[in-house]
Length: 223
Image (cartoon, rainbow, N blue to C red; front, side, top):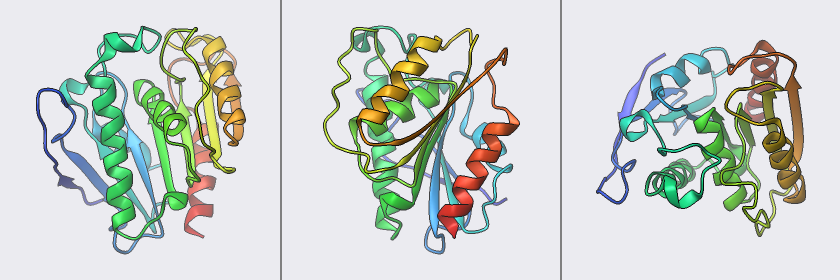
């Protein structure tokens, strides 16, 4: 799997702009679809490309952005959103930049999959909820929508049938099951085709069932 780096601009108010983006799989100008892979707290973009090796990628481009300081935002995803700035806004902006870059290469949003794990899953799900449209898919592995329980979830717009996958343990030490349920319900209201899978006794990890689901999603995307 060849890896290249793409860079943008960064300033103090936007810590994630200008950070590397690792690319693998098919070149953007030859790909039939693309997947954006968003790493968790303390991890890196390379770890997501390692996960991507489990998927069929012959005609899929992979882009894995790197967070500044290996962290998209400093506090728990359940904290008030103001305490997670400027990282939260910068991270959401970074995902938007990548969606635009991929679209500029001729791959429309309906052939782009947004995929994140842990903190990256929270960022991915929040981006999709705030920017609803028909995507190729949205995958949140061990994550949920960002903010305290009382955060309004009346996101405007529609996901127009986008496949949404949310997978998590019932005893995840970082992701309350109630937030998984809340997130799934919010995406259903947004018009997503939601698949929610709660795994009994699993740790904070990715399992084979989730990998199989993602593989099938990407195979349909390339088909």
